[in-house]
Amino acid sequence: MSISFRQGLLAAALVAFSATASADLVFDNITAPLNGDAGTLSATGSTPNTFMGAGYVLQAGTTQITGFDLFPYNNTGTDFTDLKLNIYVWGGVNTGTVSAASPAFSNLLGSYSFTSSGNFGTGFFYSFQDPDAPGTTPSLSLATPLNIGSNTVGITVNVQGSTDGGATFSSLNSLTSVLTYGTPPSVGGLVFNGYFRNAGGETNGNFNSGVRSLGQTDQGVAMRIYGNVSPVPEPSSWALMGLGVMGLLAWRRRAA
Image (cartoon, rainbow, N blue to C red; front, side):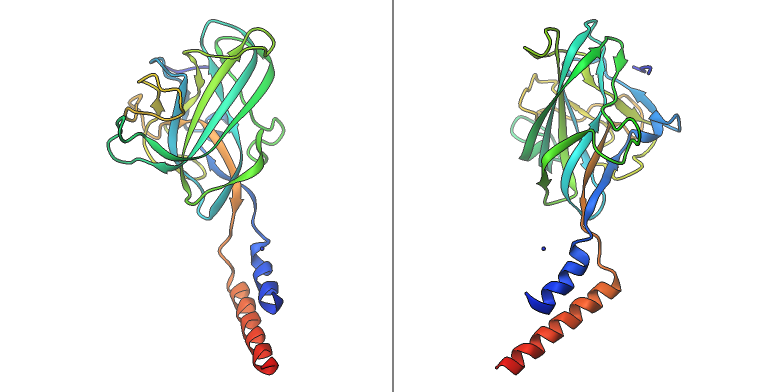
C-alpha cells in the first residue's frame, strides 16, 4: 500500500588510531525516498502489524549503536496526542527457517523506549530525525552506546499511541512503521528482501513466522542507525605502533 507523505610507548601508539573512532551513520534506507530520488515509501495493510522488524547489515567496523531515526505511520483512524517508540536490538539473525522453536532473532542486546508529544493525526507518517541536518545526528539517542559483536543485527520496532496526553499507551494495528522499497540502502545493507511482522501475535519483539513481502525489491523497515565505527588503521598507524612495541621491548631489555 503506497502512502503519502583505549602502558608506555605501546599505549601511545594504540591511542594514535583507536581514539579516532566516532559516531557515524551506519545504516540508511530512507534518505533517498525522502529526498524524492529513486525508491518508494510504503506500508503494510496486513495485520497484526504492531511489531515490525528486519535484519540489518551495518557499516563495516561498527562496534556500537548510538541511536536511531524512525518513521512511524498512523493509519488507524485515530488521532494521537503522544507516541511511544519501542526498539529491540538483537545480536543474532536467523537466516534459515523461522518457527516458534527457531525465531527470527536471538541474543537480545538491548531494548529502548522513547516518547514524544504532539499532534499525530491519522493518515500521515512522522519523521523522527534531525530536522535541520537529517542523517548527521540521531533523533533517538541512546544514553549509553550499545556494544555489538557483529555488524549484522536484528531490530524490531513497536509504536504505541496515546489519546490522553501520555497517561496510557496502546499498540494498535496500522500504527506501524514505514517501509522502503525499490532502491538499496545508501549505507549498509539488508539481510532479507522483506520485513517481519508479528503475524503470530507475538509481543516480545521477536517473530515466529517468516519474512513478508510486498512483491518489490529492497524492502525493509525504514530507519537510520547511528554508531561508533573503529576504522582500519592507516599504514602510518601500524608503523607507529610497531615503533612503540620495539621501543618498549628495548626498554625492557635495558631494565633487565
